[in-house]
Length: 160
Image (cartoon, rainbow, N blue to C red):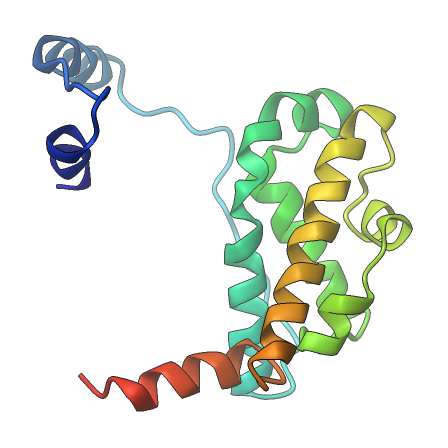
């Protein structure tokens, strides 16, 4: 497992088997509780390429979970719901999710489209902007107009 690999290769990482066992017992007694079931509405993708680009951007923004508590406090939605709402709103607003569109985002756009108007969420807004812009710049530097082209290029290199 990746946990075992880290423990074997990292200087300061150790796995406490007793703590894992205690956690497993607690979880099996309590069961997993979710606040809501994630749902994916039918989305208006123009093509498979458009869908792949959207999925890649949605996955890219999964780092928002570090702001879960602030997001719930500010708007009642967790990180997954907020990021899904934002990328879906971008889609409905006509974003192509291509490199040029990623480079063009700014903080005000992200605040509005992701409903992140609370000042305490400004660091998250900046992280989203930086992540999207830097991805757009990297894609352009690689002569890839979008995530789809990037994936296609790498799949062609390694057909397995």
